[in-house]
Amino acid sequence: MLIEKYDLEVFTPPCEPGAERFSAIARLVTDISPVLPYLNATLRGAVYTQSANVLTWKKGGHNLAFHAYEIATSNVEDREAAIKELDGLIDLVNRTWERRAEITPDHTTRQRPTAMAVYKLLPGTNCRQCGQPSCWNFALKLVASQVALAACPPLGEPAYAERLAALEALLVPMPAIGSREKARGNG
Ligand code: SF4
Image (tube, rainbow, N blue to C red):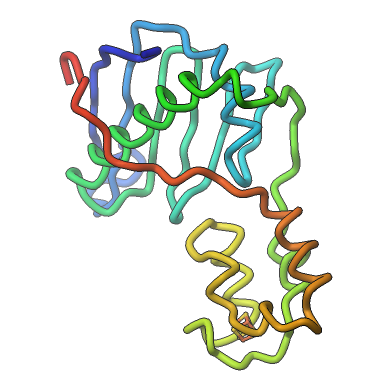
């Protein structure tokens, strides 16, 4: 296990006094730099900057950042959710590290796909079967990792097979953040 202990801090950003959104930081005693290329290879939409030794990722509207000795999340709705999310991220790091022999590390800096690039590949019929008011709204949620491609039934039709393949290539699959065994130290 790469991360066995960490200190957890949850706070409301000082620039937003009274805001109902929370940020949280897990301060680590272990340098997790070696796992960043493996996370870069597996997390959809992650942006890894090797020179700065940082990987950022957006998930569910939350901004996440992995540094050598720190993992941070922001824009979380409540304190408990922030703690739970960081627990999940610690678990993600540990599971990715344990699986590293199966993963080809990626040291490149990928550009996050834009909503427009994704939108252009969607059927464009605004049929609302995905539960969104339009294909554009669905594209926005796709790039924020808030929905899955499978939520758009028309993409499963043969006529859209090429577009689906292009979307799958653009939106590299990411592993789910699952629950983890409690291994938090001082947090
Ligand atoms: S189900 Fe697909 S085609 Fe229909 S609105 Fe949603 S994204 Fe567009």
